[in-house]
Image (cartoon, rainbow, N blue to C red):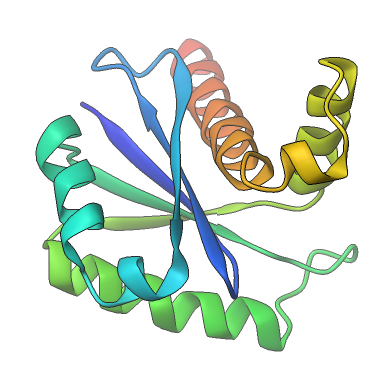
Length: 142
């Protein structure tokens, strides 16, 4: 099953996808938030190209692990996207994925300006990979 992960920001949405075996997450693109929320053609093209069966959205929890106003905003957007795409929806903790993505891109020699459009999709793939890994770990324990 392919899983489509969204790192929903106020301006941009990072998009990542899993392979059909649910082992590897790959960054796909960054889209304007309005295009994802409005189910615009570029977002529909991503859905058509990858044919995901599950939508995974990151929730920005507080460092204490609680949901604040930002998480509630993301939940609202994610539910609308799920309804529009008719994809089942799950959430994952996305704390610190953006800062981890920035560190990875800096190690690749990118400056702030060069990484601006890439951070969100790398963060989405980190979030998705952590989710995939935790599911596999859970399967091994059963």
